[in-house]
Image (tube, rainbow, N blue to C red; front, side, top):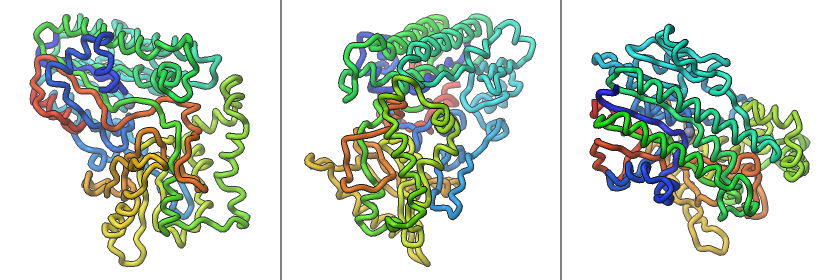
Length: 479
Ligand SMILES: [Zn+2]
C-alpha cells in the first residue's frame, strides 16, 4: 500500500516517441494528457548519471558536480573520471529528506547509488560489483533480486549477437517488474520509487532497426518492433501499478529523451579554425602521425561491415569498454598547436557524435572570457547547413547563462545544440558538414536533451515547460 505518492522512473523514455504512438501507448498518453502534455528538458549534458543525480537532489549538475567533461587542452591530456560514491547522495536525496520528515519510503534500483544504505522502509540497490544490497537485510530472501539478470551488461558487439542483446533487455525488464510488483503488494509506505532501466538500452542498440526513416534502416527485419514492444511493456505495467495504487497520486518521469544518434557530422573544430580560434599542428610534424586521427582512420578502414558481421576485435572492445583509454585514442591533444589555440570542441560530443556538446575557451592574458565567448558565439551562430539555409546550431550559449553552481568549471565555457541530424566531430576537414558518420554504427540510439518525459495521475502539473530540476520539488510538494 502506497499512501502518498508512487513514482516510476523510466530511463531514456522519450516524450515525442510516446506522444507519436498514442494508439499503442494509451496509458502513457493518458498520463501526459491529464496535464496538457507538459514538456520537460533534461540537464546538460543529457547523460544518465548527472540527470538522475538531479532528479534525486533537485540540484543542477553545476551544483551537485556529478558530471564529466574532459579538458583535452590540458598539458598532459589526462583523463580522470569524476568518481563518486554514496556519500555524495546520503542525506540529500528526496527519500532521505522525506525520511527526515518522518515518512516511510520504498526505493528500488536507484541509478547512481552503489552499495545503498539503511532507510526507513525498503531499499534494493542496483547490481554493483555483481552484488545487490537489500535494506533491511532480512528482506533479501523475500525479494531475491537476481543480480545476474539485473547486473548483466550485454552490449552491442555484432549483428549476430543482436537477438541475445534483445532477450537480455526483456529479461531484465521482467525482473525489475517482478520485484517492483512484489514490493507494491507487500510494503506499506508513504512514497514508493522504482527505476526501470531497459527502455534506454534497447533504444541505444536497436534504433536503426526500428526506424524506417533512419538513413541506414535495413528494411523489414526481425528486430523492427523491439523498441515499441518495450514501450508497450512499460505502458502495460504502469497501468497495472496505477490500478494497484488506487487513488494514490502517480508520477512517471524519465531522465532524458532518446532518438537516432546523428548519422552525419559537423566539424566544430574546423569552424573554429576558420574563425582563427584554433591552430592545427603543421602536417609534417611527426607527432601528428601518432595522433588520434590515424588510429581513428585505422578503425574506419577495418570496415564497419566487417565489424557488424564478425563483431569487434578484442582490442576494440577493450577500447569501447575503457572509456578513459577510448577518449585518449580518439581525442589526442597532439593534434593542435595549443599555444595558438583559444577554443576547441570539448570531449563528450566528439566521442559520442552527439548533436549537443561544448566548446572550451581559454582566455589569453587578462582578456574578458565572457566577451571572448560572446564573440565566438556570434560567429558560429551564422553557420548554416550547406545548401539548406538552415542554421547549424539550434542554440549556442555561454554555459554561465544556464548554470551557476560551484562546479561550473567542470563545464566547457560554451554549450550548444546542433540540428539533430548532425553530430559534433573533432577532426578537421575540407568540408564542415558531411553526410557521413561513424559512431552511430556502434550505438545507433542517442540521448536527447529536450524531450524527457513527465506524466502524472492525481497531480496537477501546471507549467507547459518543466526542467529536470523541478522533479524534486514536485515530489516534495506532493507529500
Ligand atoms: Zn538515461
